[in-house]
Image 1: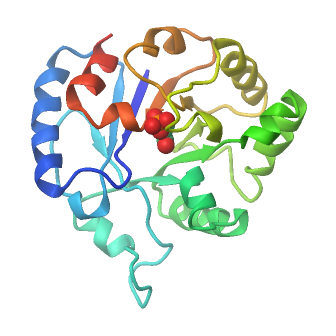
Image 2: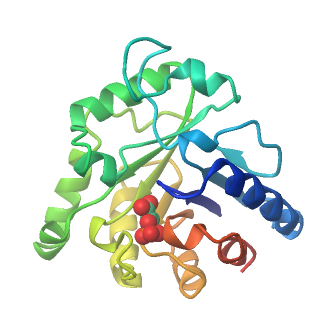
Amino acid sequence: MIFAANFKTNHTRASTQAYVEALEERLATKRPEDRVYLFPPATALDRYKGSFTVGAQNAYPTRNGAVTGEIGVEQLEEFGIKTLLIGHSERRELLQESQTRVAEKFCYFQSLGFEIIYCIGEPLEVREAGEEAVMAHLLGQFEGIDITYDNLIIAYEPIWAIGTGRSATTEEIHTTHQALKQHLARPLLYGGSVKPANIQEIGAIEGVDGVLVGSASLDVERFSQMILA
Ligand code: PEP
């Protein structure tokens, strides 16, 4: 399984350092085939060493230049970072990243060989319109994206399940993952209120290759508990 922790705008450099040390101790007993990713905020990026991969939550598709408030490849290279989250619903919604911008970013980082965790997900009104509408929405989020890229992981994250405490049901995850798998040959993660209480149920669903975790990843004990469950 893949376990990815998205800290979003949480944790500092100091608390990330402490987190990483505590996590590494706990990962001593992780299953060798499991892969762990951490996405701290940009200010906490560093050359952390351990049995996990550190990625950036965002970067601008440039090496360097005049893009106030953004980081580019030069800043990622300083810490040896070659993994990036792209298309998270919070960036699509709060920061108005259009599909065109998301696809441009994807193509740029793909051309540099970055490992990309690419997020897709539908809002509640689309979910309520039924599975067909959900699939049309999700496939639309692959516009301009090379889904055959071999350094790609997809994360299906229904927006209504993110940070709400309400995960999608086992049935909803199963149905949507099975439908997505007909179009994808890459690992497919589920994200949306994954926590220690539901990790075993979600991890056991056919077609779930891992999880992307927000809130429940902020505490190293809870995140490790999920990995070692
Ligand atoms: C996320 O935003 O990627 C996420 C899955 O958040 P949460 O686990 O808090 O729902």
